[in-house]
Structures are given as C-alpha cells and as structure tokens.
Image (cartoon, rainbow, N blue to C red; front, side, top):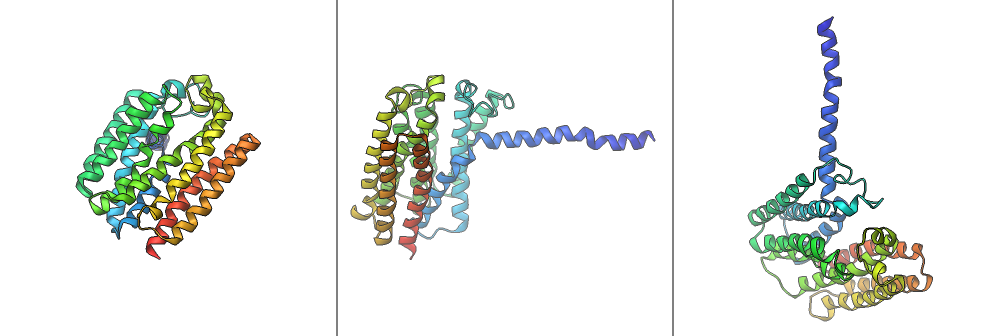
Length: 305
C-alpha cells in the first residue's frame, strides 16, 4: 500500500517542477519580444527573395540568426527598462518586473543570444551579414535603450535605425555585399518607424509621462506629434519611390503598390490630424503594420512575376 501511495504521489510532486520549467521557457521567449520579431523577419525574408534565389536552408539560417540577434537585444531592453516597466500597466507583468526572471539572468541571456547570433551567421552566411546583424544589436541596446530613449524625444528617429538593419542582413546573406537597393530598403524602414511608433505613443502618452520617458507627445504635445506623423508619412512616400526612380531595379507592380499604400498612409495621417482621436491613432498604427508587410510583398511580386 505504501508503495502504491508513493507511486501515485510521484506525478503530483513532479507537476510543480514541470510547470516551473514550462513557465521559465515561456518567460525566456517573452524576453525576445516575438511579436516585434515578425516584421523584422518578414523584411529579412522578402529582401532575400528580391536579392536572388536563396535556398530554404539559407533563408532559415538567416532567420535564426536574425531572431537570435534581435531577441538578444530585446532581452537586454527588458533588463535595462525593468524599473519603468514595473510602473506601467502594459508592462508590469513582464518576466522581470513580475519577479519571474532575475535581472542578471535576462542580461546575460540577451548578451549570450547576441554573441551566438554573430557566430551562427558567420558560420552559416558570411561575416558581412553577421556584422550588420551585430550593428543592429548594438544600436538597439546601446544607442536606443541605454541612451536615446530616456534622453530625447528624437529617440525613435535615430534608434529606429536598428530596426531597419534586417533588409541589409538579408541582402548581404544572399549576395555577400550591398548595393543601392538594400540601402533604399533600409531607408524605407527607417522613415516608416517614426509615424508607426508615434501613433502608438499617442495611445501610450500617459504611461510614458508617468515614468518620465520623453516620447514626442509627452515633450512636444499631441498636436506636434500629429504634425510630425504627417510630415514623415509624406517623406516615407517619397523614399518608397527610390527603388524605382533611383535605379533600384523595381518596376510597375511595385510602383502601383507603393503609390496606393503610400496615399492610404498619408490619408490616415491627415485624418489623425483632423479628428485628433485615439481611434484615429490606433487605426494609423494598425495600418502601418499592414503597410510595411504589403509594401515588401509587392517588391517580391515585382521581381518574381
């Protein structure tokens, strides 16, 4: 009977350990910001398809390296921002402020992923792709997270350069070098980032103000933020014409798609300036996600069809 009791109790005793391991894995994945990764990987893969005809193996290897690098940067961001994350409702349940992951663990986890990404990409693609990926890691952690985010309202402008690196990585992975077109793709993501993020920052204005992060609507007000969103939307439209007008090699399918998507983006920015509502800001933010995905998909269609 005692043996039977011991046997029946064993699974129950094992459950907490199993549950704890599962939660640890979930939290470590959360540190890599998987939702943010989706667009980064999309711009990487589509750029690779524009650059040539990469094998499935090369695409997978590049995506793994890109995820490790961006995920490591995300983990370092979680570590550095743990003080303000604990004060905002949107981020208070993240692994570190919630007490499920120790800050030092997150820091070394992030650094480890960044180092592993460089080694992996060097071995599976080339040194240029690995170095470009590392520059994105350092740009997001050192320039944006640790310096710009808490010191200037222009944080997302210059810090957004880190998020524009994936097209460069994808192109270098396929070709081993860089030409004009990947630079144009970098510029597109660079100019897309401010209106995309400022629309979100309008929605999060009170929380940013609460923790003292000088996002544009906090420092310069919502009217100025809406004006800047419209300005950057127009600049973005102009930049998206470079892959055609600047000799990037893209043709009429891309031109038609970029024109339609760009005019819709500007129209939503104008609507935000006139309506001045949270609903208009949310609509622009959500469309900006679809915009970038469709824009890069149109490039692939232009090249492959």
